[in-house]
Image 1 (cartoon, rainbow, N blue to C red):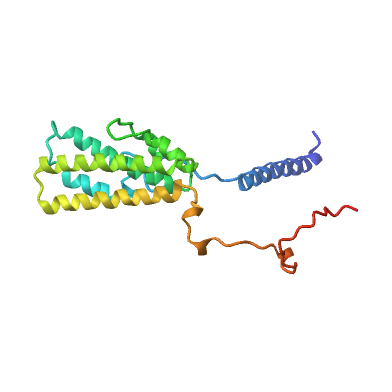
Image 2: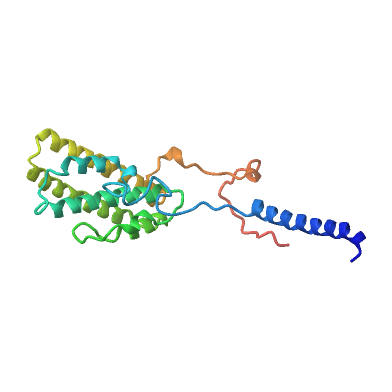
Length: 228
């Protein structure tokens, strides 16, 4: 073995190693970074952090359940309490999905369908909202059904819990606030702009710059097409 060639081989190996390291570093710094989209991407986790689901987006729902929790019978009132909690979870998770920057159906897909208060799956409602393909009348019916059923459940649970009038009024006020909040968010996110409902000042005519110096049209048309 010629010892005079050893330093040259070392230089070659070092250069090759440097090139490999450079390629790895380049790939690492130029690979696009994507945000992780999973449960809890916006507004906290959807399930398992408390009641109702998605409680961080609808704190009034948690307050309602906290007042009733432990004050209704676990045998007779448990089904009514569970259904009320489900309605509040649907409202909270619908708001969470509609306000999420991800623009996907995530939190609402965990919510169970209940024939007593659902016209259609809340995940389907969310999907049509995000695509703005839901009819205003359908949205009104869906929310009215949730509201009316929840009010019936609240009356039954408050009677069973023997709450004072002030406590009953507080729960009714909290639910009205929560329902109105989600309904307003849904209308602004789900429905396309209704130009017929806009004020006259909101919409104006647009005149292209090329027509600025053109003569005023007096309604006369000669029928000449410009052909010679």
